[in-house]
Amino acid sequence: MLAGRTVAVVNLPHVEKLVRRYMCTYRSPSFFFPPHELLQVAACIREGTGAQVVFLDAIAENLREEDVVRFLRKHQPEFLITLLGVESVASDLQCAMALRQSVPGMRVAVFGYYATQFPSDIMEDSKVDALFRGDAEASCVSYLIAAVRGEALETIPGLVGRDATGWFLNEPAYIREYDSLPLPDYTMVNLRRYKEMLLGGPFAIVQTARGCPYACTYCTSPQDSRYVTRSPERVVDEIEGLVSLIVKVFRFLDDTFTANKKRVITICREMLRRNLTIEWSCLSRVDNLDVEMLSWMKKAGCVRVIVGVESYAPGVLETFGKCIAPETINTRLRLIREAGMESLGFIIVGGPFESEADFELTRRGVLASPLDLVIVDTLSIYGGSDLTQRYKQEVEFQLLPYISRWKNPEVERVALQREKTLYRQFYFRPRILLHQLFTIFRYPARSFRLFLHLVSFLFSSFQNRERKDLF
Image 1 (cartoon, one colour):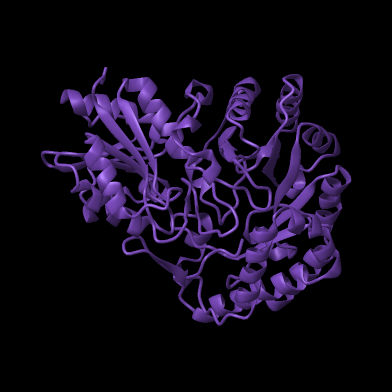
Image 2 (spheres, rainbow, N blue to C red; image 1 turned 180 degrees about the vertical axis):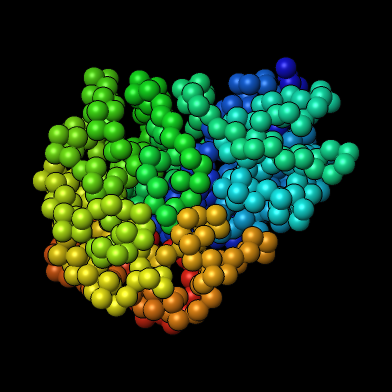
């Protein structure tokens, strides 16, 4: 249909080594993900339009804006498709507009969480030609074909675009049949650029579901109000393809991979049936952990389970929308160790609702836990989330330029102090240091850099969240 046409799909450059995802953005020094959503969109465009797709991960290749300009001028694409990060939305949009000038007539289309939630701000404050609300795959092929043919764009589901009167707005569109999408094409990137935290690489991402069946109030996922999954066979087809590309480690990036025990076991059994030997990790909730499921995960190559613990304080868990009894958390976490896998816990501190007594419950719970690793973070404020809406009188939020913080600076100061306390008391213990000896021997340089980063953070005078993530 669009044979002979060129579409560029670009992970935009940034001053930091960002990991951009639809729902969040990481600034991590210890792991680096491939741009999975962009690879998925690129595969859809190539299969659905027949156009030549040129792909560039500017962050993985350590490229600057001027390098991307040279890339675009070389290939002369008619369209540039890119993902706007969350916290980086303003700088990403500015970069995309600068790149728009590099090729005369090139049209720019963007997508992402904030593009879906606040399309009016983006269309009014920039010269973006089109915006895909919801799943970009639901709109991008129809948009490209109609734009090239000069056909009407207003009826394309999920599309926000420009017309003679200004611009038009459609409701978000989402993929309902996940298996209908082509697999992301990892041959478009250099997989050796990507690493999992203290597990190495070459590293890739596998996503078996979009959305989440849960409704945590601080998260961006519930705003899409959907949960769709791929068939276990299709999931394992993708893993088999990654193994053939010499990928050594991958992560199931579903918000909650373990949401359906039967489905997880089916995927694990199929991996074993095909004799796929590869290490992997996944994300889970505390209340999903199950002995039988964990046993199958271990057999199929899982080496790490990442659990959203968040807090041990009943009131905080209730505010987060997590119906979990704090006294059951550590009992369930022990199931991971008993199954022979490493456990990593996400902990959230801060917010005007977390009292000193609440934090003390979390501190004691974490130190008594069987967790091997923790990632502690201060509470992020996402525009459009249920939590932000609930505390909107106490939050300062603005999309462009991007501002997202508590109005009372004392809230952030206390949160950062609590973050430091947990990191210091958790990691500087003999049990944890001994447990990590193998990791230190396996990745000495990376472990040493991470240790220096931790020490630097603990003795820093940061008074706000304008810093890289610790892990």
